[in-house]
Each structure stands twice: as structure tokens, then as C-alpha cells.
Amino acid sequence: MPSSKVQGRRGVAPKKNAKPATRNKPGRPGGSNGQVRDRILDASELLFAERGYAGTTLREVADAAEVTQALINYYFGSKYGLFQEVFLRRGKRISDQRLERLHELESEDGLNVTDIVRAFLIPTLELRGSVAGRAFIRLQARLHTEPPEISYELRNEAYNQSTQAFVEAFRKALPSLSERDAYWRVTLMIGAYMYAFSDTHRLEQLAPGVCHPEDSEEVLRQMTAFVTAGMEAAPAG
Image (cartoon, rainbow, N blue to C red):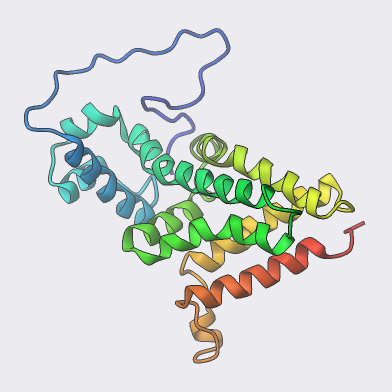
């Protein structure tokens, strides 16, 4: 478990009126380029997804990416700076894709709850098509078990804008849905899809040959039906 204070290039949000920290940056290592940077991010993504933030060392990342630790520090400043870059490069892309799909729906006549649900789910579900994408889904699920000083800022930066937009969209599609119920149901949708998409479920053991969690179309159908029914349910009271 990491200490209560996260060290890194960004790290914990600075106190009000505090001057930003500075870091002496070494000269650019010879032979480095954008491909090397991406290789570091790709290797880190797999390791962080498998072992979590605390369980992953920069030495392991360096070995997996076939670079030196000095090069990792050059690009990312610290382990936490690396972790931020790994999470935000896909997290922000997911958020942008959700908003794009939602804006397309809003340009049409009326908002349909099922379509809103699909617009939210599909950008993440599509990541299951690659090893790296599946690793990120696991990393995203893992983030909820990391200490708040690691997880809160990253989740907020990646997803707050799009999540707020979807809460508003559900309330437009369901005028009787209260603000409280909308936030609860969107939050429960997030928890459900993280579990269903992250390959950590038990369906293979519970219902072998009946349910096929590797089939993304089946997963999308089941998740959409489940979430739509929850959104359209009577008020919680």
C-alpha cells in the first residue's frame, strides 16, 4: 500500500496559493522518440492492470519496455506521473467518444434511454477487442481499490464531464427521474459495467455453456437491457 502522500510530477493537488513545484529535467536521452514513450506506456498499462499501482515497480516497467529507469523519469517524472499518463490516455478518449455519441443522439428527435445507455457503454466495450484494451478495463476497475489520493483526481479528470452530461441526458429522456435517482443509477451502471467488462466475473463457473461473457454482443445486450430497466424503474422513494 503506497503512503498517504503520492509523489510525482503531478501528485496530490497543490494547496491553494501554493507555488507549483519545479523539477530539474535532465537533457534528452539519446535515441529516444515517441515510439519509445508509447512502448513505456504500453508496458506500464499491462503491469499496472495486473499488479496495481503499489505492486508495480519502475524497474519492472523498464525491463518490460526495454528502456532505462532514467528514460522513464525523463518522460514521466515519477511512477505516479507514469500512472497518470497511462490512465488518462485511454480514459479521456473513452470520455470523448461517449460525448460524441451523445451529441449525435441529441441532434436527432428526442432521447431514447436505450440509445443513451449504449452510447455510454460501447466506447469501453470496444476495448475488449485487444489485449491492451482489456488491460485498461482491468486497470480502470482496479482504480476503485487504490487509495483516494491516487484514484479520485484521475477519475474526476477523465470522466466527470462526460458523466455529468449523461446524468442530464437521462433526466431529459425521463422527466420524472429525480436528480438523486439519476446520480444513483448512473453510478450503479458504472459499477455494473466495470464488473461485466473486466473479465473478473464468475459466469463461466455459474452457467457454463449458458452465458458467454466473451461474446461482446451478448454482453452489450444484457447490460443494455439491465441498465435500461433500472433507469426506467419507479422512483426509489
